[in-house]
Image 1 (cartoon, rainbow, N blue to C red):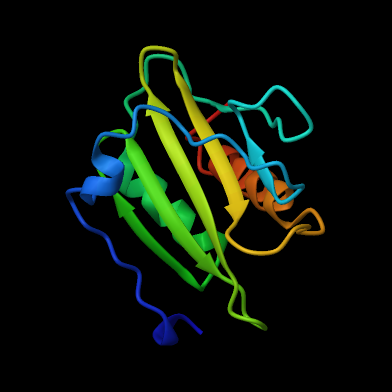
Image 2 (cartoon, one colour):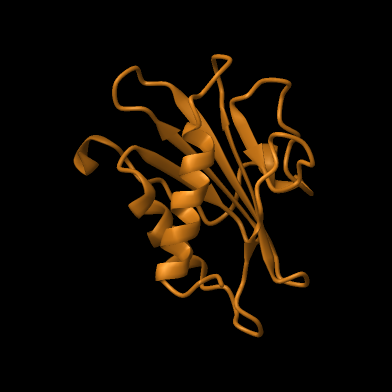
Length: 139
């Protein structure tokens, strides 16, 4: 239920993420996917529509549709979301790095705890990809 969780949107990203030039690498566990990975963790980045500025407010609205249990912080080029599972309360991290020059959004989704995620993070990124396409943000 959306009223149980707060969507936190901060115009300035916290110091831990403000200087983050890229996505963190995935750990040596099958509970993470990243568009920067070149192994079993690899997933394609999101391709932005050419010559179209990123409407970050619209992007945040789409992220809110991804899950009811989501908290988001962001700055101009980085969005960090924490997604809490409904049953056990596990927290997963979702990071998006917007690269206007390359016209892509790099993505990483990872479980904070546990070893295996049963494909949850990969499905989450693919669902986000589908939502972003539906809203005309990516190709």
